[in-house]
Image (cartoon, rainbow, N blue to C red; front, side):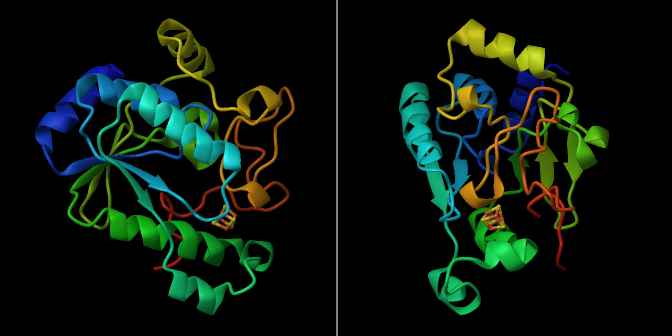
Length: 215
Ligand code: SF4
């Protein structure tokens, strides 16, 4: 199915029980725009880890206004848990899996309470474990995950940006192709994999919201 057809079918199938989870990263505007074209009231969940680039936070506001999103929700880590496990805010240095768990996985789990399905912007061309991604995933927790852009490549993304004149993430022009937290993201060089700038130098390639590091 084409991405917008899959989106429409999913939104109809899970009416009131589906959310889009968006990082407001370099490519996020495409899926946000597609969802907004169908229904601007679909809940959009944004994970504010407390470690994001200021540019991402500003972009979230710009894009949400531009698209007219009506139900943008921000999920944040539990401050008491953070004070306990990451009092200095540098857990990412010693234990990035645990840091992601506290700052991403647990807050998203809480934000998804009440939803039976969620939409993600992952694509096969991003590489790593994503090369074998399916358009629809049945999760162990019983939820369904919908990946409408699974088959899209970089040219498709660029063409969609151009066609709808979508605003670019402020860091995109500086070579940031996959944008997560500031301490764990660097720009990539031409020819590098799109996500090579995430946790560069470590074996880690995913934060854990899609592939759990802990039970
Ligand atoms: S990406 Fe880095 S800073 Fe962000 S939650 Fe994961 S380990 Fe922590």
